[in-house]
Amino acid sequence: MLGKLMDTSNKKTHPETNWLTEKEVAAMLNITSSTLQNWRWRGVGIQYSRFMRSVRYRESDILKYMADSLVEVEQFAT
Image (cartoon, rainbow, N blue to C red; front, side, top):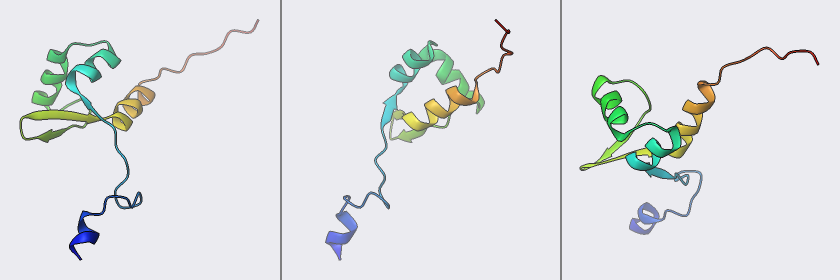
């Protein structure tokens, strides 16, 4: 039974998640780490997880945030 609890090979119950540091996310979004810290303090921005003293962001949440921020523009006829 303990083996089943420790087995992380089942992708359906343990999907692989790529976790990013604050510095990596700041670089992806071209913002400062201070901006991310401010967002967390204000309770806005991107979901994150706190592991002890480390803050991590799921890559999928960053990509979704970027996709949701897209601005639709009208195409000019050529």
